[in-house]
Length: 78
Length: 246
Image: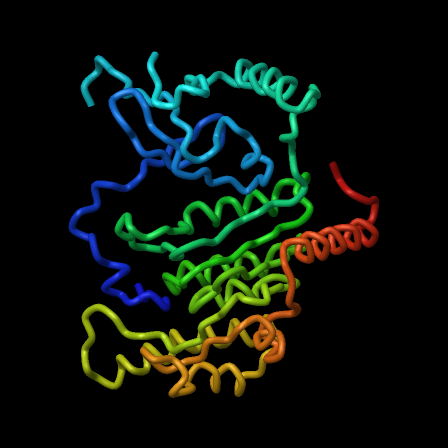
């Protein structure tokens, strides 16, 4: 793997040991989006990842919007 | 349920039916019309921002564009008959060589009209992606940094290491010259120029210069990009037998 970038490699790689804060990727109604969980039941939309430009006009999925985001309790152990 | 955002009641990851109804109600209230502005687009838009992320997941302070997102999207764009043109918007600082070249090759081999628009920056591996389309446009203030690939990670000081690096570089250069009007001499001159960048060797090419060197087709903005793409889509409709397949 070779990084070909204008950013210094130490800047790119800093925080490699602490990868906890990655936004989660979820799919809502077929639109992939990155969300940041806020608490046990909510998450806020970081960005949507869609090739359809019209999706960005949908006010329901605008970045910063808080959506319900719940862990599902399953009885069957993993 | 309680929400942080009090002004807007939150959707409970609504089922499509309910979401649709809400959108319609919202549209009537906000725009005084029933038709929602959202719809299907015949243009497929891909934004390549931040670092192009490849085989390695980068730490979270990086904004990244992941190739596992883009590659299936490009497959879908090629396969979906409703999509007639692809617009790629670049504002990238570079990234993984393999991922970048993979994306560039995918764009270059699409059978549908493609237009790339470089805004802000299209540096390093962004350069082959920028030139991969049928027609490339650069904003007047946008820059492209053309510089040699630097070695990173564990380096063994043997001649083979240098040869390997040279090969990696050759892949990028060959792609650029075969997809743009720039000559091999010119791109190598830009890449290995000393004294222009403070950190390293290489050249920063701004808007008009990128067009002058033949890297990019024209200078312009989003209006020009959409106009060019629509023109190419129209041209393709005229030439393809039986018109558009729906």
